[in-house]
Image 1 (cartoon, rainbow, N blue to C red):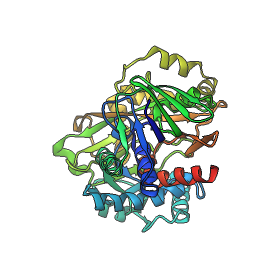
Image 2 (image 1 turned 135 degrees about the vertical axis):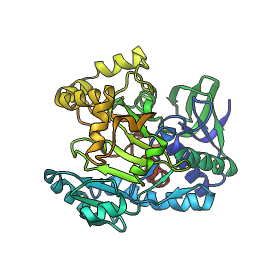
Image 3 (image 1 turned 90 degrees about the vertical axis):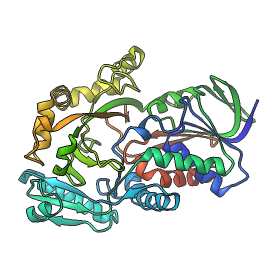
Image 4 (image 1 turned 90 degrees about the horizontal axis):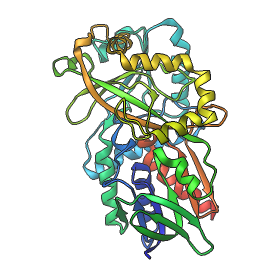
Length: 401
C-alpha cells in the first residue's frame, strides 16, 4: 500500500496550489494528489470566466478580501514566470440608475480599504472613453482586473508539482477517509493509500468528502449553474474588455456581465445563476436524481428558496428566455440585439449553504484532528486567490500541529 506524507484530494487549482506550496517549503515531502477525473482542473477551474479579480467586492478583513488582493499579485507574477499569457485589461463596474450609486460608493470604499491599486471613479465621459458602446451614469474603473486561462494556469502549477517530486494520480475517485492512530487511510477506486496528513479540496463534492472522514457535512454544497452567451464575431467591438453591473449585496454572485476572453478575444455575456439539477450538470437538463434529492431535502436549501424565491424565478426566466437575458445586458450596451448573441459555455458553482438558509459568503476551511483539513467553501474569487490560499492552508496547518 503506497504511503505518503501528504495526500491531497482534488486536482483543481486550489489542491494544485496547496501541493506546490507544500513542496516548495518542504522539498523532501512525499505528496500525491488524487482526482477522479482523467486530468486536473476539469470542473470549476476549467469552467469559469477567466477573470483575475482585484479584490474590490469583498468586506475588508474577510478572507476573500485579503486573499484576493494578494492572490491577484501572485497570479500575475506566476503567469509571467511560467509563460502563461495574462492581460491586466481593466474592468468597469457600471451604475445605470441613481439608486445604484450608494452601492457603487460602498464598493469603492471596500476596494480602497482592501488596497486595490488604481481605482478611479468615472462619469459618463470616462465610461465612454474606456467602453465606447457602454451606457452608465457612473462607474468604478479597476485597472488591476485582468483575464487569463485558468486551465493553462492549472497545467503550469501541475508541472511544478511534478517537477518538485509530487505525484498526480488521476481516475481515482475517493470513496473513504479513515483517521487512524498512525495514519489516515484514503480509499480510492484504484486501491488504498495512507498518509500522515490529508487535505480535501473537492469543490462540488467538498461536503461529501468531509462526511467521509466523520466531519460535519454542513454547510452543504448547493450547485448553481451559470450559462453564458457570447457575441457574434462581427459584434465583439461592442465590449472592449470587462463590463460589470453593481452587484446585489445580498448575494455572492456578481450579476450578468461582459467578459473578453484571453486567447481568442471572444466576448462572453453572463452568467446567470440557477439551481443545477446535478453537481456536475453543465447542460440545462443534466439530471442526477441523487444530487437533486439531496439538494431539495436539505433544510438550508428550502429556507434559502423561501427567502429568495422571487429572485430565483427571475433567474430561471432569464435562463430560458434569450430576449430576457439580452434585455439585462442592454442596460449596459443599448445597441445589443438578440441576433448579436450565440450560445456559449456554462459552469457550475459550488456554493455552501448553511442550515439556516444563509449563503456562506467567505472562504471556509476546517481542520479536523490536526492531520486532516477540508476546504469547505471556495467559490469565486478562488481561482484568482489560489496561490494565496495555498499559502494560507500551509500556514494554518503548521499552526494546528
